[in-house]
Amino acid sequence: MLAGTNGTLAGARMVLTPAGPVHSRPHRDPRLCLSGSFIPRIDAVGQALRPPCKRVRQGMSRRIAIHPLNPQKRALDQAVAAIRAGELIVYPTDSGYAFGFALDARDAMDRVSRLRELKPRHNFTLACRNLRQIGQYARVDDAAFRLMRSHLPGPYTFILPASNLVPKRVATEKRRSIGVRMPDHTVAQALIETLGEPLLSCSLLLPDQDLHGLEVEELFDLLENSVDLLIDAGPCAQDPTTVVSMIDTPFQVLRFGSGPVDWV
Image 1: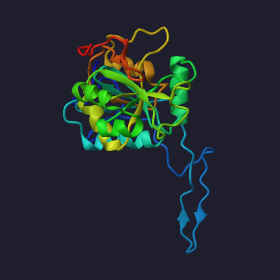
Image 2 (image 1 turned 90 degrees about the horizontal axis):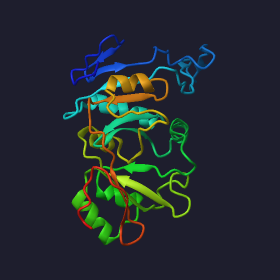
Image 3 (image 1 turned 45 degrees about the horizontal axis):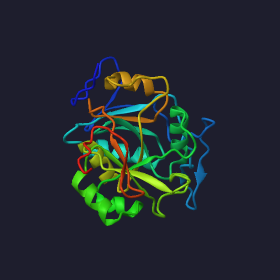
Image 4 (image 1 turned 180 degrees about the horizontal axis):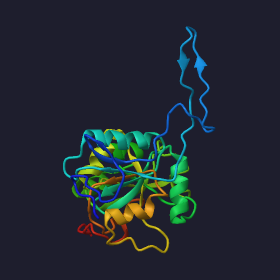
């Protein structure tokens, strides 16, 4: 059953919050470390301190239902907290659901590479909030700026030379480029704005799996042991983006997708 904006899910265990249902992993006392024991530390005045604990990945993913047009702040804050903790999420865009993770989340990036069986130095994409943010992470000349300004936000991925803010492991090896985009989806835009920085992103594709036409419930069942969090905003478009290389002129269309090529 597809989760609607009211957050109703048939047959699923949930925890209700003001932002909607959050399907969570089993409760874990934050004081418990890997051994399951709690050894208190004592501060200078005899008070017990909570020991630092390593984040433990468990098998069951979480799921947040969020309104597709008016995303709740509490739900956004929960999603951003997961991203900042280095977790791997699935979030909605204008071209389907996508993997998302923080720029410095090396473990999440490695997990995506294994899930999708990607070649080394795959060209990941930065999902950005606005052109100013794109300009911080990519080198944009006047012609590229004019084209992006007239087509973003929208279903396009533009390949540009990467700036020094992009980690070497993320940029392509030969020409040090990076894909950038501005999804035309309310939840995606709100998520990136709340995060305060671009979200490293990758299309939700799996080897030998046809995901086209799957409802969110089916997608969650398929991914629940592979990702940490799925942001459920209901159905969204499933056509791929148009990919345009702006490394050289004239610009080259690498993939024709849902974004019209009307500048040639």
